[in-house]
Image 1 (cartoon, helix red, strand yellow):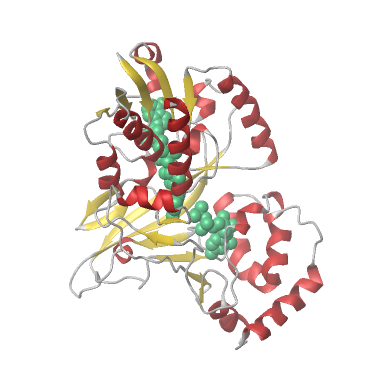
Image 2 (tube, rainbow, N blue to C red; image 1 turned 45 degrees about the horizontal axis):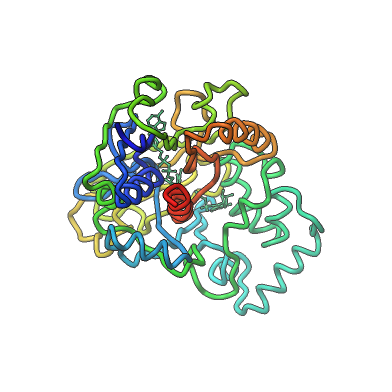
Length: 368
Ligand code: FAD
Ligand code: UDP
């Protein structure tokens, strides 16, 4: 008999299992995949740590979370600085003086601000109700059209006018020459890959892979006093109120016989016509990895509408799905013997640091 059956060996499940075990609880972690680490899984191909489910850069402002992850992995000092390719024109991301200089030839912050102000004045919306209005308010029409519209509509499969404004507020706008994509105090990539980080969290804890909770629910429930469920909340309830929408992503990964394909870890293709959203070159997440004569691994990332059976990646946080989630949440709250957590269990667009923060909070409440 276990105290906790933890469904999902991703970051949420692993942090929860680690803390509960440290407090003397018996945990069994299961995952339907054939590996641990959930979506942050990295695997070695040609000696390069490949992020199988998309590029993951750890970044946080939370000192406790940063100290916590550093107990389980050593982080390098990688700083994410994606480049946007719009029909062959290259722009630095996020929106900063390098971007503004390339876009308009402006030299000083005052000139850049004046340019954006002029564009804003033309199209300003007092209370932006959607991503398009919010983006134009933030950076003006030129940047919206070249760097935001095509990318966002490919990523989400919906027009920018039908997407919530908050998605674009994630991106910094800076009047300095700083290409750091994140405003976080701390940033990096685990030197040994994320799988090793999760393996360290799960050290000494029983893990059963290739085990689908929903396929054998009664027998698995009987093993533990309580369940921590980090899969999709609607699947837990057999979709009885309807299906929550997700965006899915398909990765086309290729090993290339060259040392350096694109010179950067992340290049976003921001036009509407290129079918993929970005190309990741995994070796550039690590320093000093462009020696001549070696191979490289790239992944083209295609965004796709999700249907049951596909991997769910991004919750679609619009009103309709938010309302449906709220109804599932009521069902979940009526089941105190199951704790729903993580990106899928809570249907939230969580970064890794938030997942850790919330998992630590929940396990503390649970053990109090
Ligand atoms: P998951 O990692 O999805 O783990 C859930 C686990 O539950 C999975 O392993 C799944 O197989 C298992 N499971 C589901 N159902 C069942 C079942 N029925 N039975 C058994 N097991 C089940 N965050 C950042 O901080 N920085 C980034 O750069 C970043 N980039 C991202 C890029 C992409 C493309 C995506 C999609 C996300 C990105 N994130 C990033 C977010 C990050 O992936 C998540 O915050 C984190 O992985 C969530 O962890 P989790 O444990 O909640 O979920
Ligand atoms: N975005 C954009 N152009 C880019 C990169 C991002 O318009 O070149 C927008 C897009 O709407 C995206 C949002 O910014 O959904 C957040 O981007 P981020 O890279 O944070 O998304 P992630 O893939 O990490 O979830």
